[in-house]
Amino acid sequence: MKKFLCLVLALCLVLGLCGCQFITTRRITATEAADNEALYEHGMELAELLEEMLDSPEYFEMMGGSERLGEVIGPLMGSDLSEPNSAYIITLPKEALPMLMDSAEVDMDGFSGGLQNFIERRMISSVSSILNSRQGAETLAAASILTVSDAWAVGDLDTGCYLILSYPDVCPVMVSFCGNSGIVTGTAAMLIGEPLEEDTTEGVSRLFDYLGIECDIEELDINND
Image 1 (tube, rainbow, N blue to C red):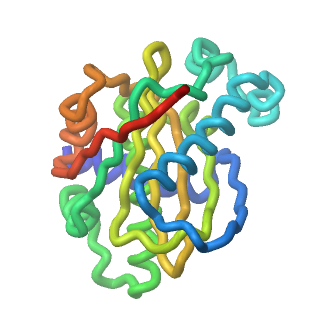
Image 2 (image 1 turned 30 degrees about the vertical axis):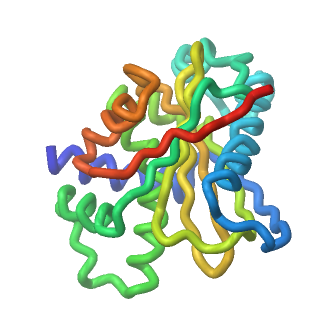
């Protein structure tokens, strides 16, 4: 288990560094707070980008999608991500990432503080890749293509957190958030291999059981009218 998790962590870091991701950076006024409402709104912005990708066969061709990847992505094409059935904010304890590194037997003692912080931020956005990797290499590669990132000037976050957007007929979208110095970065990916067993806080919690991380989960009151 430890060797497998270590391998997956390394692969996710590589995919995060050089994978096919659509990344934009847009700065807005720093008058907002990095609260749940703001995070939900930004998560929906990223979901809209994912939906645009799924409406564009040209995007898939531009990314060099193979026939085998097409078999994974094809059923998702044309998905409507504009109205999630429910949304959840997942907050990790500050010790979560060091615990994850320890479980994978990753030793960062020789790394500088700056490199350690970079790897920890990268790990926050790699959790969706770790979950998708359980379904195989094709699913992980497809999820890498269906990944978007953006940044906003909305204040600081005390610790990394996640937004899960749950849909009745489409696999969930996971958005990871991290940031400091007034800039919050969000990365959204579809959990292609990890549908929610049940659309509840308990169902969301089970997604994180594989990582051995206990986290706080809050269901948001969303209005799709």
